[in-house]
Image (tube, rainbow, N blue to C red; front, side, top):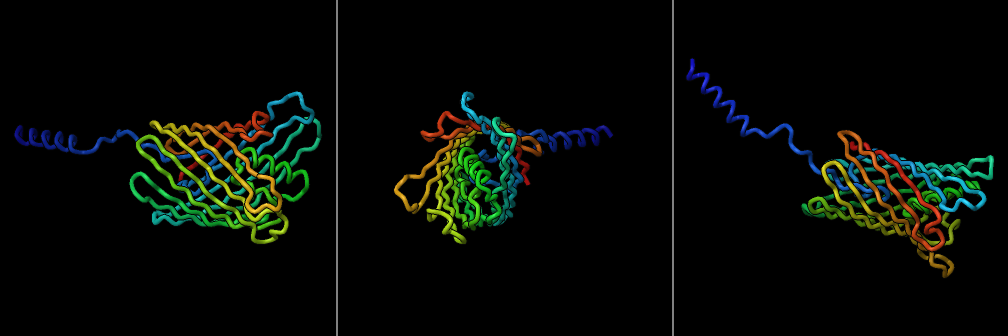
Length: 280
């Protein structure tokens, strides 16, 4: 009996030592950004709310702009997937009893993602931007300004009365706790394009981040520009952002601080964005 007990004890001990520990350190969270394109992001539901506030309190008509962005996407294990998203803008101004509201264009399309090697992933996007945006004069202007301040790469989603084709590619490099991503995209109006004095809107985003345990911090830059405009004026806008995200067991809340970097808006307005991502 004693021999049998000793044998069971030795067997149990050896099995426990050979088995993996249940309290292993969780894997590092996936690269995640606050205002970059969704092309390189995994399956997720994402919502965020941006508060845009002018820095000059002496001007008449001060107020606040609110922009809510909703996006959902799914990428199958084979790399193919789809997405859909829309945004809503709200403008509140001190010198007016009115509030201004605008809904954005509905965007939807397909995704393809693949790992080229252990350090490099690439994602591609082909989609449509459908004309659901508000076309009332001042409401539309508020929407355009709010989108330019927070997400210039999405300017086409605030342009009413046109259907756009949306193309994009996003390579991501990651090594250890550091990751980098570049987005390159173009939005081309294909229906009712005569409403615009340009052939397309292009954009290039650059982001860098570092992750530690469940925290992710990023620095991001969005740049959008007009292609084939009828005049010679250079149409180029930039927005920079810093963000911090916490990857919980089921949800990943984040906060970002951003501001335009162009001469006419730099230092005049900033945005605080709070968001929540639910991985699928």
